[in-house]
Length: 74
Image (tube, rainbow, N blue to C red; front, side):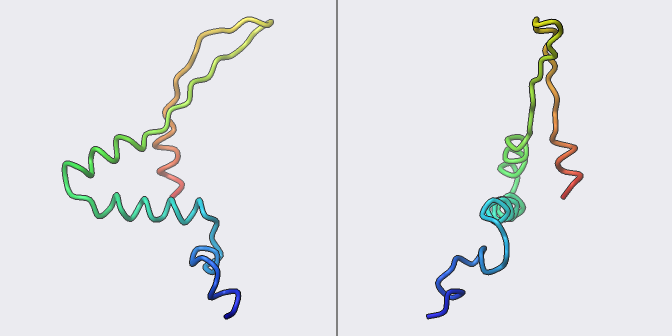
C-alpha cells in the first residue's frame, strides 16, 4: 500500500485540515434549503471586541463585525 493511499484525502490534495473542513462546511451550507440556510448564515457572523488602553487604563470597548471582510476574501 502506498503512502498516498493510506493518507487522508485532504492531505493527498495538498490541503490543510482546516481548509478541508471549511470547504465541507461551505458545501453543506450551500446545499441547505430555506429557512435552515438563512439560520446557518446568521451563525457564521464573526465579531471581535477590542479595547484600546491608554496610560494603563482601558478605554471604550469597540465591537467590530468581520463577516463582510472575510466573505470578500473567498
